[in-house]
Image (tube, rainbow, N blue to C red; front, side):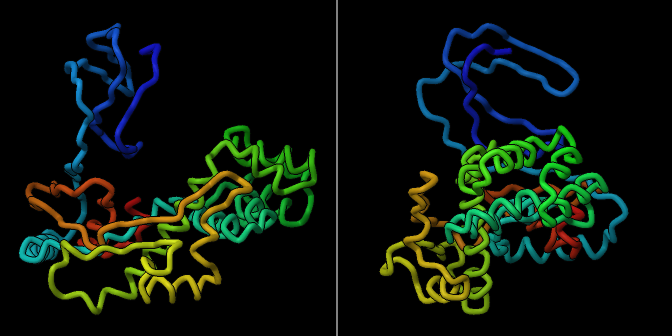
Length: 294
């Protein structure tokens, strides 16, 4: 509709009312635009890069124990640091396999990578897709293709090319989702494992603690090396030349600071730095299965 490339900072929740800054190059063809799902409004011009620092959340909570929740909000206000885990949705909300696919890509195990994209059904999936995934696992590929709903474009594309080439590597190269997405999800999983190891040992200066995942031994600390050993990988394996993916380094704060947290009239509000997950805050406050709040 804007007839030009749109640049944006961060991805917002699809099931929410969200505000997001986007930017394009001139000329500006519209001042305002409205339809059912989106409103656009031209704000102005800038000749400098946006500095996105974080997000503000306002979440309406129904059927909660208000006294317990208020007490937990007070506790977080007095000590506003929570572990900066990557949230459940980083690995797939309904089908948490992105990090598993990433692990097999790092290991150059192309067959198991596509099997986790195509097969391994989850209980919460529809009967059609579960049936199709079971067929894939049983080697009934042509039959599975007939069962996969048209909306599952990633699965259909990879399966079609796997049937055509009988080569898992060639099939992976036709992925509609960048393969780097899966590798980054695996790094996020490794980060969560390293952070889990460190939690009991961090008391002070939580805002200064960082975790580094690196292919260089001198940057990868003892916990990082132990997790690599548990996973059966080496840092240098994140340079996957076969699929043109190189993710040798991840640096992230170990703790997030929850700012301006309040609970009033069923609305929970707080602010987080860029890249931090509101679902982690909700898990801490509500003590729920993360799949119910993702």
